[in-house]
View 1 (tube, one colour):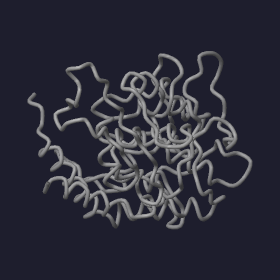
View 2 (spheres, helix red, strand yellow):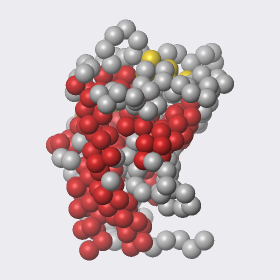
View 3 (tube, helix red, strand yellow):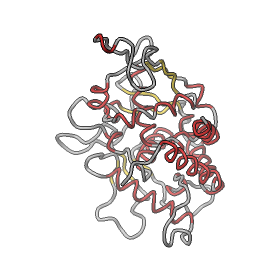
View 4 (cartoon, one colour):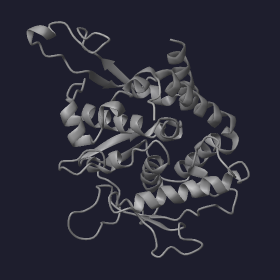
Length: 316
């Protein structure tokens, strides 16, 4: 299969954003409203804390975030939303997420309400009701999160014909344990090894409009910037791949985060557009890109911002 061109990739991205915008009433807008309900009725955290092993690996096993990066599906976004939901939930059992797959009451939130997707193409897709499509996507995402290589949630086994997703049990977001059984989820301690994601990443829709590779790269730099005193943060290609499981192609999506206002990027001023750099023939070593966080960008509605970024890149 021929590799797609840059223009083709940008056009597909813009078409996807167009489709999400067109269906916003029963997709994007509804999902943001559902997240707002989870937050306003709950503890109302200003940030969602993620245990570091969910993003960064200290072994040769890729971390869960990198395992969830996929061009299709919703597992990474749903996984992050489960952590948000658990930290918003009031009461003594944050590990029990008692959301129905499809809520029966208009004031309740169901798993299907938390899915955002563009129009599907293919036989029969147009005839399927939107809620049915979203419920199916939620089922697939939760099953992926329950897989042994991720071990973020537990579903009843065997799954009943109905109600199998109404009481999802969440495990600690540290990835699969080498020994013993998974540990039920508890609220993270902010003084421990965690990375903090501002609540606007969820409530303003960034979790929905960023692609998986961009989310993984963003979480990596939140981790690195928190460890860098002062910022900017940087990492070698080898360390990035070993610790975060992020490929070169995935990392190169940082331009989206930069132009959307979520990351500041300081490239090597001596590096040329073709990847070569001044002094290369004399054995000089290029400087790594350096990154800073720009949390103010999270306060904007993600959908129009991303649409503008992709449209301007296409025009350029």
